[in-house]
Length: 264
Image: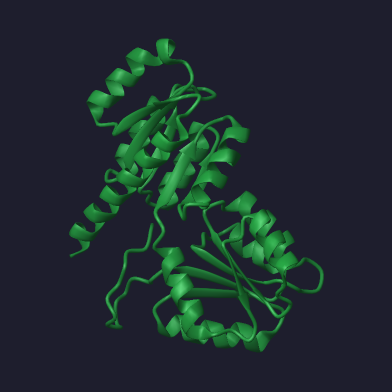
């Protein structure tokens, strides 16, 4: 489930968010874990990339704090593998070797921020809080190149983006976590998008849904029916990128407002 914002009061049973710390220095892992746990984050630590990937295969994380330079698998190689497993995990690279080349390589790989060692904890905590609060978008489309392009486009604008390429993958992701906005392609392997739309309504009823299609005439009847059932809108391929982004941002803002009202 997508963690809800918490008040400054401790004692709530609900964690702020899930954090994975990966560093080959045990003291660094222990110190960061203690601080974040005291702030009601749920924290796991790993001393290597391989150990981190084992954790990622069984549990989802909102944020991964990754040491840049580790024996064996470095932080950027690890993040590329994490992205394949959990594309919506926000990566913050922590390094004692900060340089323009390091920053460029990390951002090109999809990492969100670079933090220098020794870590300034107040600044790091602000970044983690901001990352956990970013709107969640699920893109369901079998066109992997399009999904990758949308991931880049939306991450640049501080959306957390998860990808699914068929109805079963979408089902698994919807059962694990709430989303603010779900983009649903109308032509999917073994389906036409209606199944995914109804899964969203069943598992995450507050999520806003945007139907996407490159077959306007062929899918007109399906689109019309789903709009009547409560879909929030439709965007046609090739996308008007500015319009698509504006639609997602508006819907994500509305979903966040609705969630806050429920939690108050």
